[in-house]
View 1 (cartoon, rainbow, N blue to C red):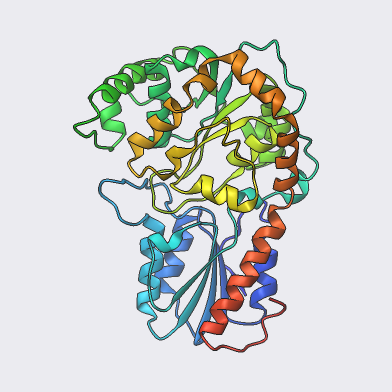
View 2: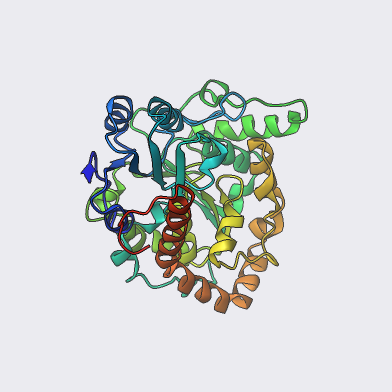
Length: 384
């Protein structure tokens, strides 16, 4: 097996991949090193009739998916080209992305999702205790934590401020050393439709608050150096910085890394909402709520309206996620009362998240077995 570039804190996907592929021709890559990934996919020459490729992390690089213009993420286009350059090779692709078949459908490419980045730091997260010691004297209902500048985060933040949801929430945004964007329309390439006049005015009004840093908590650019033990130490950041924020809140608007693309990845951002024991409203890809239910999570459907999960238009999905849960976000006493009634259910969700590793491993083995049977391949790849 060749490691082209290795992800930090991958103590789940890589060991499983090594076991399953054995001595067969195989390659492991970390997509955050976009240059190394692109070089490999463009230049690699497959030597075997069956090749195994494991790509950890996102497939959009730093080029955001535009729902109105794009059909595939940038990394998906590279993978598609790789498969087409090797039409006589059966390529088994292990990926952190769910629903990748929505973007990629080559006859010689077989997709096996092995779980998103919330499977990182398994040992560290096993030591985290759930945030059950809530501060019921807090004036805050919810938190919305945002770091890297992504279009959906800027839209959501702007809408929250434009509709004055910031009155009951703690909203963070990355203090970018390059400065805040000064024009919404120049920064976000999304397209307002004819039914979006009111939404548009709210978002543009709220954006003025965001760009002027009004009533917004600026996130530290160097959180891992300040609150963790090294690069992307998300477990350390949770304990040293985020735990206090979860103690003072009861709901979270989770801004995942992928939102508009047809496929998605689940990260530590969703994991923290479960460990933090907040009611989750998740701004992730279409279907992320359904995926979490499949994993066994209680999504509190009697408290949180998740019907936004199936709405394709990114503007409409963000607005629906917020407006469908208006009372939960704005009525602090209501949120506290609901939380007290659901305390035991939050504990059950922590039990569930501690077992996602075995769930993903079992699914990976099952899908691999199915792929090999479909190819009528019988090679010794270890237990699967």
